[in-house]
Length: 92
Image (cartoon, rainbow, N blue to C red; front, side, top):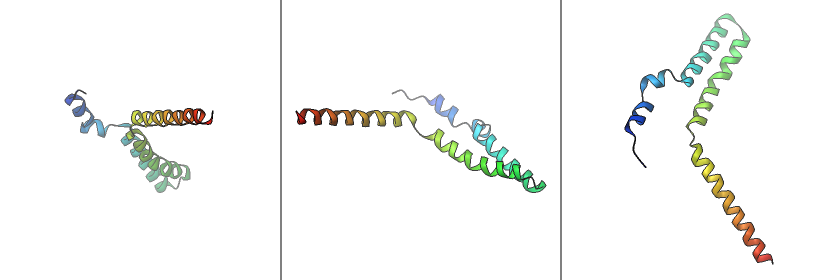
């Protein structure tokens, strides 16, 4: 597998992290929460409380290696099929 320094540099870019979707959503959640608390608006407080943990969940889901996850599920399915075939051969 080739090592791509340019791609790693791009992913680690500070500017990219600052303007990422997660940061924008987090700031909107904080702003909504603060605005709601200052002006006693329950809907803004509710959405602020809802958005802030949602950003962390989004970050965790995005971080997960989905290719490895699907490969693991395929391997598990293959093993189950092999066991089923073995059980059928042993049962006859």
